[in-house]
Length: 195
Image 1 (spheres, rainbow, N blue to C red):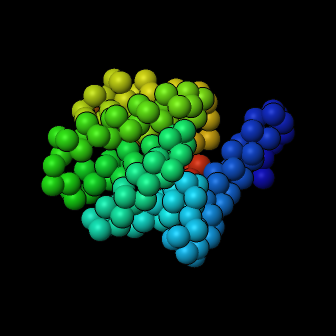
Image 2 (cartoon, rainbow, N blue to C red; image 1 turned 90 degrees about the vertical axis):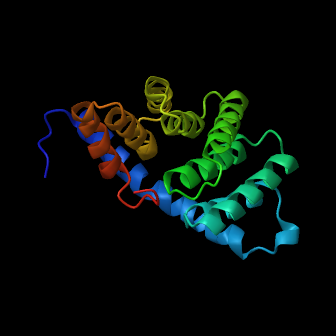
């Protein structure tokens, strides 16, 4: 139902919509597969995927289990940046949902893990997104926006980064600037586990 005044714009929007719909589903399937494996057979990637399964349940116990699995993954493979991002995200969600018993040390641990993820792969949009979200949970909004914009430079379809920029603008009292980012996040990731 679109006019073909600019076929490339339509093509870009169609591609972004398809990627936004498929990416969360593929991640969910991988987490379910990892969960079904026996723990003694898990390698670093499987530990990471199992950690994600717990992460997306958001309970205090699940976040602690996720953190343990991400730590095991980083010990198994110290070059797996995604596991460091997962570790940072486990602290992030503990802080956001009020599960943290030690908020200040957890903010520091989240920042350390997120920085490690970016150092391991500076071209990983998800790592920059995690670092940005870690900054805004530390009330470092300008640093958050910078990292989240970098994530969007690397992957303009990353719904979490759009949400993160929007949240950082909201937290820094710039709600009007947040709206386009929040709307893009919902459009790109309507089935995203974080929505």
